[in-house]
Length: 256
Ligand SMILES: Nc1ncnc2c1ncn2[C@@H]1O[C@H](COP(=O)(O)OP(=O)(O)OP(=O)(O)O)[C@@H](O)[C@H]1O
Image (cartoon, rainbow, N blue to C red; front, side):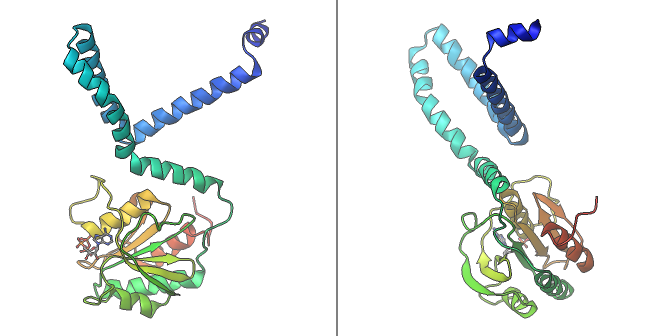
């Protein structure tokens, strides 16, 4: 009876419409919840109430200003949320991608780990980004194009202090060192302990903005860390680093 009534009231198209709108609203609420959105929303509601009040008591100049600011406000929201929007769109694209952009072989992982061990023992600072499915070229800046096979010697040479390329990050794409000296976006997280500086913040930044992972060797302590999806896995020993890289780059099934 109830379903009969529903069928009369709504067509198939209406149901699809309602489900799509519900998913859309859920997406917006989820997006606001995981970003700084709720704080901004609170501010907007406050301004909206202020506007409403100014309309009611007919404060014309104030209402006029609010009217003009409305379009500017919409534009600012796009600017403020630009990183989140980019990340969300990239993730959607990523999920629909079938073929891997590049694949990293086991020998490349071994070379990266050996270079990290060497640099960690000698406290040579390093930042190595490994691309996964997503091309990160539009997120990084100032890179020097290298395009050379990954080798332990080359990685160490790039990060050797006082050499022209040692500042910034190396980007590994498949079997190649694609770039060196790259400037990465810095994470704004407040969860990173004070002892970590911009090198670790840059590693976190690229792992937040893309699906790439980043290995950091601290110049101050020799500590090896790995940034994955906005989280820093700290104090890894080289064997653990190798296991984690193999898992994350799809060479070994993740253990649950
Ligand atoms: N945005 C960035 N992108 C890439 N590399 C960066 C960026 N910012 C800083 N770096 C690198 O980090 C170095 C500075 O590291 P800093 O001492 O501030 O960080 P840290 O996290 O404390 O690392 P460490 O433990 O090695 O000292 C710079 O010389 C540069 O090589």
